[in-house]
Length: 101
Image (cartoon, rainbow, N blue to C red; front, side, top):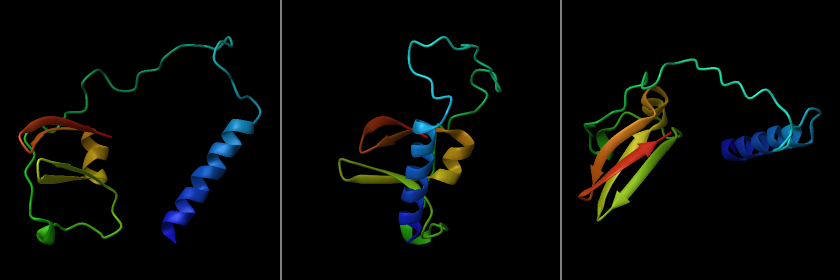
């Protein structure tokens, strides 16, 4: 039920955004000023993550996760963790990867 509500909510928000007054299209004159909140590289990436076996992980069943499986090895990254760091540099199944959020 929660997934349906999230999908419906996303659909409503997108619909309002697309048909709402003030919609701008590519090529229109707009103020292109970019306002920077954080300086470059202010959010540190995780470069040497550590993991626990899935049965030992303290994660809510409905928690959003990003999972990666490569060459028979699986790693999962919590969205809570990624909200704070945004990037995890890791090695999965012998391959270097970057997981981003």
